[in-house]
Image (spheres, rainbow, N blue to C red):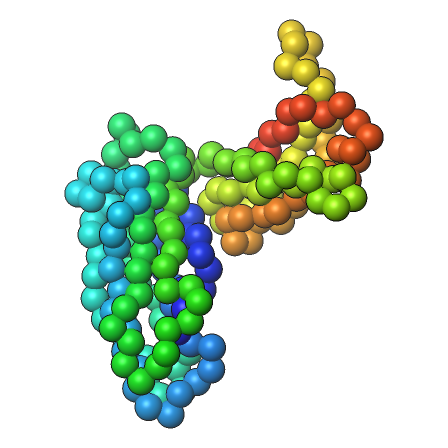
Length: 183
């Protein structure tokens, strides 16, 4: 029994965030698991509605979803988080992903996280944002008045998180990266 991923993404204007929970295999008996929202940087009652309950997996069923209701809070910053927790396992053992995070983003904002260098010297970064569409990764050597952004690659973004490694970074003077959402 696990969350489908360790990090879910939803835009402020989405209204709710679907949170998928899954079994690694079908079971012959009914399986139950409790879920709750707790912790994180988002404010309950202002950014989201506290969610808790029990998911019931019928025999043979492997996937269930619960929803976290998002509230329109213009004062909330981008990238606020909600902690997600599974507990109270009945007829199943907990898996490695019983905790996860919901990241509430601006509806079209992307976040870049530096992951460091790979063994061949390529610079790695993670692009997070609303799932779907595509993201274009660009780089520049400086941010002067006449910034020349170079397109590195355009990637599909089905899950909301894309990892990218810039293999040319080892031999280039690249100091800045950005990503843009594309339809």
